[in-house]
Image (cartoon, rainbow, N blue to C red; front, side, top):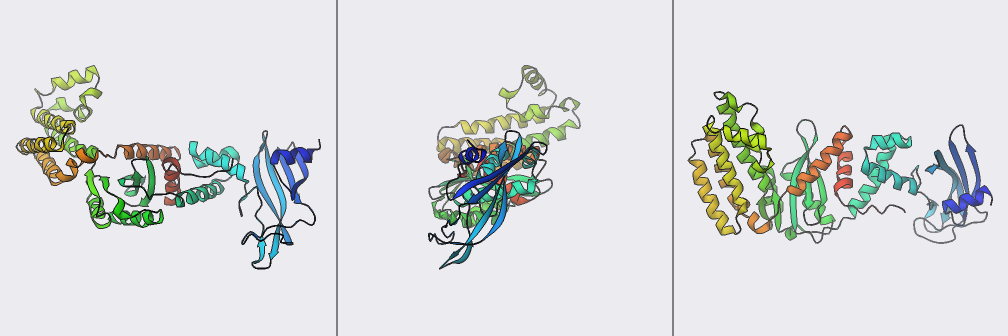
Length: 404
């Protein structure tokens, strides 16, 4: 079998295309394969699909293909432009590559699998290409897949923000908690991000009226955005963020008392962690501190009692429990605890809604960790567009429709 016949079979090139020639340079570690179409061949118009359009002229093109063993491989072809009676002169789309791409479809499929597992810059070094070229491939497939997202059946939504860069740069994630997928990523963390989501939801086949359950933190911006753009949604305040307010109060009490009680130094983790997560040595130390730090110990007991709120089985029982807890906290004579109790009381309907919806942002916390780990490994992303593309790629459960 001739080299050209073997390569034609390996590449899967079908008439009117054929392998015309090949050149292998061992010193350069490179294989070049020339493709051509048979004389007299006619093509379909790439715009309207009209058959049997004759070539008008040709232009040479080159594409990077999958490696030949350890050697880089390139395909070369003179790509015809055909004359269509209705559309005029149009460039033919070759079957092995996207229009205007310098890579073959199979090479792009490998690239997309690589960038799922490693930073784009690392993948670029691995394949010997500039990362800018890889980002073009990523954006093409991610943008097309995001445009295909179907949100017509989404009725529950969770929103949270994650840091985009150092400082006060954030993106907001809008997540379908039932399918554990990111539906939309918006720059910023203000009320306008909810409006941007609603606009995008309509493009994905959904309607704002269909969102019946919404889980957010106690951010005034998200609360306002929900009221303005998702009026049919019942708001659940995320239990972990509610717990954060109480934990913050405990830590404020500890810091204030630590000025007079040196035994509290280095004990922050003990007061903020769940007892079940402490080692035996840490539990013994925690048990020895209340005698020396009465105020912090009292705040800690109030915190543990608030955790018990979520052990209630019925909304009515939870409401009675929260009322008793609020009375205790506001009579604790600990100002940070009193402030936290008033905050909890002000958001009580959304906190108690959890006992009906059972929706939390725990999934988003996991997605945030995934995004931040990828961002740290990549040492950040140069643009918001790059960050958003990676969030969709890692957490969007996209249908990329990569060539096999």
